[in-house]
Image (cartoon, rainbow, N blue to C red; front, side, top):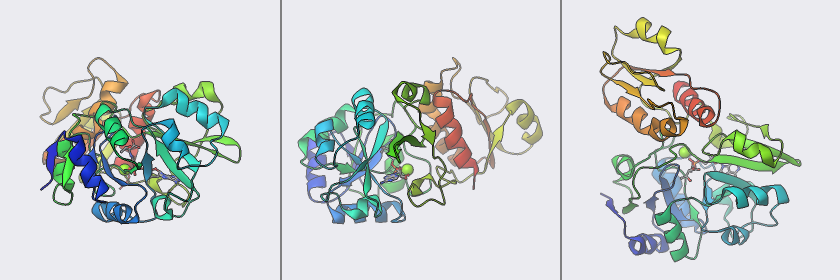
Length: 315
Ligand code: TXA
Ligand code: MG
């Protein structure tokens, strides 16, 4: 069983021997290995049971460290990195040969981000290589937002989990790139579209399950074991309340439903995002047969919340 702790030198030694460590980030926990080691990358795919066509994100401790693994960074993407790093923004860049093709599923571009978590930033300065880190969940399941979530599912398969407390953002990074000269958003996430807009006009290339250039956007992703229905709770709750249902509501509370979760009484989308995945996990374990989820406002982090709920519902 994985040991859980906050020993950065221990984590660094495990990574130097090409083994894997669960790491905290501000978005979700990652399953990290040396991004320049084919052994470690192979082990990440195997541990998550992830298909090799779904590429991994390289985590770096600085913009300089990113330059060491990619070619010339186009000006508009550099501006985004300077504005949002460290933070929940992943940028697709042309990779150098020191990043194995296995990491990018054969693509010439590698996804790179600098996470905003003090333990992981310290770890990244203690090791001489970037960290490949997908979310630390079995392929297709809800991402982990605590060290315990990682231990629950992958604890038997990895030696160490760095515990950095619950993730503050709670949804994965926003993924952007430049394609045919056009700024593009590939995944909605922790950086809101509203924050990107001052940097240019972005087109959306989401949900590309049939497009091998963005394979991770498979529609039924982030799915708990229990079916999820999304809609207006005022209509859904009376319709389904005879069965054993769980509820995910934004601000409203349902005192007579035992498995009802209100994500933010105060109506804060960032508070709701931070609680979303832990709530899906709790409902999955609670024995309910169906999860009814509210459609969130389609603004700010509400877009990423709706995206994850839609994927959880698409099974
Ligand atoms: O917030 C996050 O991004 C978290 C934390 C751990 O950093 N990581 C994460 O990784 O969500 P993962 O593997 O669950 O999702 C990465 C997604 C892939 O599924 C894929 O869609 C996209 O990033 N991606 C990675 N490399 C890519 C590439 N070279 N070209 C296109 N898309 C890529
Ligand atoms: Mg993932």
